[in-house]
Structure formats: C-alpha cells, structure tokens
Image (cartoon, rainbow, N blue to C red):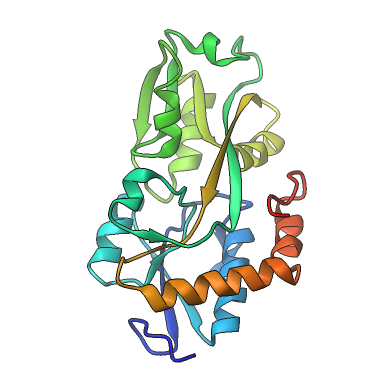
Length: 236
C-alpha cells in the first residue's frame, strides 16, 4: 500500500507495559490481549510490522506530536480534549467504567462515595467520571506501568476506599481477588480508538478501512469474544 510511516515497513505504536488485561498486558516479553491482537491483525493486512514503545502514559501525546511514534494505541478513550490535538480512527471497542471496592465495603452506589477516598489514574477519563460523584475525595495515581497493581494494593490496604477504572479491567481484578468486588458500573459507552497526528491522513484512512474490513469479515468479533467473552460485541 506504500504507507508512509516513521520507519518503512513498521508501525511504531506508543503504548505502555501497564497491565490492563484482558485489553493488554506483557508476559514473558510477549504483548498479549485484545488490543495487541487487533494491532497485529491490522498490521498484517497493511504489510507493516508492529513495534511497541513502552511509554509513561502522560508522555503518549507529546511523543506522538514529536514524531517519535506513528500512533498511540493503548486504551485511549476518544474525548474532546484529545481530539483537540489528535485524529482518531473509528473505534475498535466501546466500554463502560466501574468502581471496585473491598468486599466488606458499604459502597454500592455513587451516592455512597461522599466523604470517601476514590482512587483513579491521574488525568484519565476515569477520574473525570469521579468528579461527578458528589462529595468523593479524588486520589490521583501517576501513570506508571505498575499503576493498576499499585491502586489495587492501596485499596486493599485501606489507603483509598474505592477505585474507578475501565470496567473490563476491574472485572478481571475482582475475579482474581475474592477480597474485592465491583460496587457499580456506569454505562459511559466510551469509544476506544487509535490516535494519530492530524497530518497522518493516509494512515488514518488505511487503519479505518482495515478495521471496517475486520468488522465485516468477523475477525474483530472473534478477537473480542476470545478476550472479552462476558461483554457483547459492541458493533452490529
């Protein structure tokens, strides 16, 4: 297709080694999960080799704008703030957000958070949602690649009373730890997509066409059902 990327024949992907299974995680040097599987399939269609950069999450967009990666492809909800500086593909997933608590907690709804400490990833759509929970004291955590385990550890230790994050990540965490439970889910219907520089028009078109093709031929659904079987495939 002759796509113009930073390195010929490669798609340099701004991402993180952050453990966000089942969306994405790194195990024994391999990047696994729904998102990297989709990325590999897209790149195969486009004749590109995917090459991931492990970046601090707060550096994603400055790295993109500095032309040190072709795309940011890592759990990126499409928001007006991000659209002010970047272009986005069509979504490859649509997700809800949720709040997780200790199993013995009295928190069952947003109104129960008043006066309590709610943790979340700094500068994230999750903490933006937390601002809507009246009276909750927001506790931001910096975006290291260990931030989810750090936030869950703080929850278990009682340093925070609850944690807001993407629902599918928290469902996986709750299933792995009987001392934690999902308090409630907020149906935010956040579209997740690939971010590009505004001048990457040809690459944007190619990515959109490939994702459309993968939806049409069932590849995207197959990958979704492999990694996120408890959530209905969001595209029909």
